[in-house]
Length: 397
Ligand code: FAS
Ligand code: PHB
Image 1 (spheres, rainbow, N blue to C red):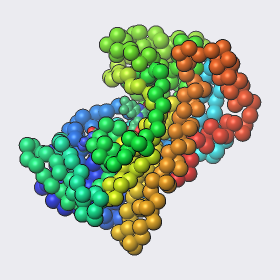
Image 2 (cartoon, helix red, strand yellow; image 1 turned 120 degrees about the vertical axis):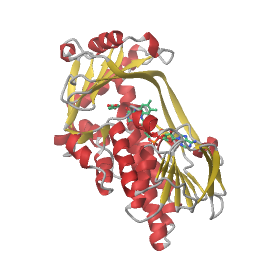
Image 3 (tube, rainbow, N blue to C red; image 1 turned 120 degrees about the horizontal axis):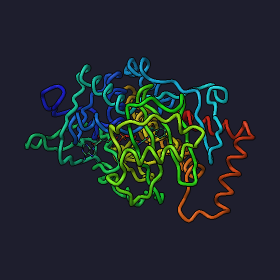
Image 4 (cartoon, protein in one colour; image 1 turned 30 degrees about the vertical axis):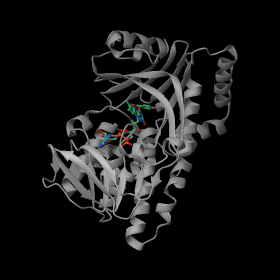
């Protein structure tokens, strides 16, 4: 369904992808009077139904407030003042509030997507669902356009700029010249099995647990809906994991002193996602710019994926606004360097948190001793805890 009904022929910014990056960019531009059209491959129901991130940095919260799409988040979101790191049952609380005087917001990506789509509809931003076979044209020049299929008809959308917000498997990075030559990647030898269930969370904050059987994370979406993860082999198949088998593993990995606090319930969703670190260090070519998962992927251990998408589109929106308001091209010319500066720091934190909390196949005794020493140092050092805290709440934009 297109919102509104007519299929637009011309806009200032064509946004490919109606996930968090595309939707947030559209709102940042809309509030400045810059027209855009979002072309989304999937249906609205499919896009809204994806279960993904849960932790919002204060920068992401501020962006949603800046575009006036924060009312439900401010009502229903949970402010968390800390989280726990557990190692073989021994727990250490990282108190964000005391260490860096800032909290994080627990509010599911699903809800953000719904709120941003509702804002698109209310503000009349054209959001074309089931836009198939998107092809990007002439972004080397100053009159790019996008071709796409909708209901069996080929459409052309003329624009000034193309924003590729179409995720890790989209058309934008695939079209960006030399993107592959600028890619840096690390693949982890395990994945995360996630389960969502309408049961009360086991704790008032998140728990990241390093256990001899593997990593586990106790997270949440509300006071009545929990989200848990366990590290698993990438060859695992979700159909081999009954709900009970997942709950049994969570009770073991989240420590026998706390396992009794886990409330079991039927899974609303369960899935396995692979873990990798990936950065495409080329994020623009001519009038094509990429943002969010289209440009980078992080292991979710640092809760950075969605939040990096937010900072990317904040930079891109600032640059486009400066272009339209004052013919200032410096933001556009410097977009990649500015975004990469924050991206690589989030990649490092996500990698470090994964190294600290997961059991790697073929881990040596020395490797394990390093994890234990790392955690022992963190436990004893307020400076080390502060470093973790300032990364977790999100480094400045
Ligand atoms: P998205 O992938 O969210 O959105 C891209 C959109 O583009 C999609 O709607 C897609 O349908 C559309 N699209 C793709 N190709 C297209 C084409 N050719 N034409 C038109 N549209 C096209 N992050 C966290 O912080 N914490 C987590 O726990 C977490 N869990 C995750 C679990 C999974 C399974 C995945 C895949 C990611 C997870 N992430 C997590 C990361 C995730 O939240 C991303 O960082 C976030 O969705 C990034 O948003 P976008 O860049 O908008 O990409
Ligand atoms: C989640 O709730 O989905 C979540 C929370 C924190 C993470 C990763 C995922 O680090």
